[in-house]
Image 1 (cartoon, helix red, strand yellow):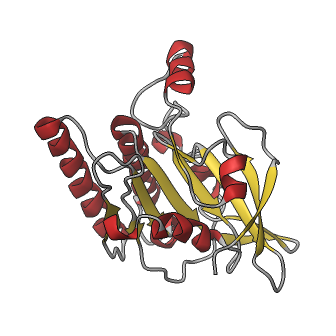
Image 2: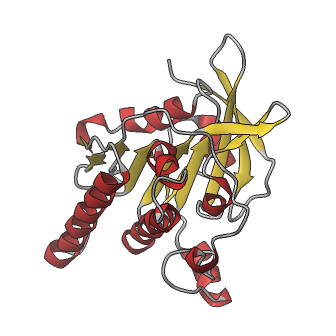
Length: 253
């Protein structure tokens, strides 16, 4: 995991998590929808939203962190929105990691990285981050951390929801709630990457199934043209934009 802190006066302070990749088992679609694990709120942040709160959120929280990729920033209206969780998914070598790296390179001197190899280590690192953010609020009224990156969230979550851990789905939902709580309460932009799995008939879909599908505020799918660095970002889900919108960008070398 990597955390980034910006210099005083700069608007783009970042915290990121570089999580080591490993092979994850093929996604298993739920035959039943989480029952007691499913929260009865779209936010999954431990609280309910009413219409006035949603309107206030849209009107007041319009701060974005540019990714450094013009096509994606234009598509998203400025970049990664603070207070939200954004997911980037796509096949292997599609450019999703380069999209994440573009933002990291712009603040490389201010990044702190943590290597996380399983779900339990992720819980520990997220707990330490939350304690640090709370201490910053108490001591000086605010934190300089504004971006958290997990690459790849599916490598950590897929192994625990494949049947090995009876409470795997509950742990997955706990991760979702913690990430969205950190984003909301500390005005962070949270960015995660997700791999693709077979959907049958030669098609592919984002891993982690229907249970995870409702978690991100924004979901982008990245595809790459053969033999060049031209990529296409497609909106799969967005709080303000219609699904299906696309934009092209050049993946960093």
